[in-house]
Image (cartoon, rainbow, N blue to C red; front, side, top):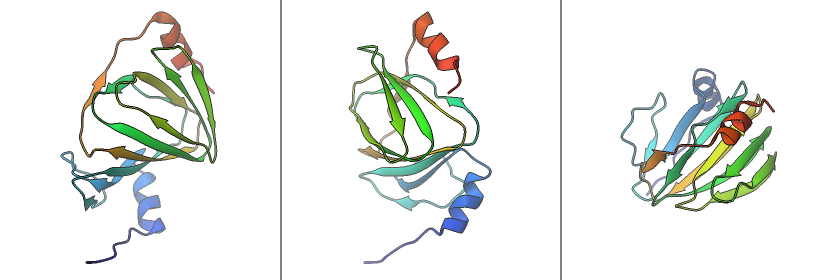
Length: 138
């Protein structure tokens, strides 16, 4: 039994060099920061210093739980076309088998959890309207 910590200073120094850092999980990709191993869940933080449009994708088995810590983001459900505005303090869930596209304004921080701890991300093709939407800065 133990209690483990990653200090704010350590995390800030890593995020100054990277836009995403995993903190917990059964990770296969090396991280700058030593993460805590866990077979059940992944936890990480994204810090988009500049406007960023993520690669549209889907998870077949993973559900994502996310919270906007700072800034603003928009997420588009590629099945319904619905765009949801996400503000600082908003919490949202992307259920497995939901293809989506997301873009974030400059200086946005997002805390995310993924269950189960599994890398099942698959990129998806998008229509021209979504491609245009992704490139409109917010």
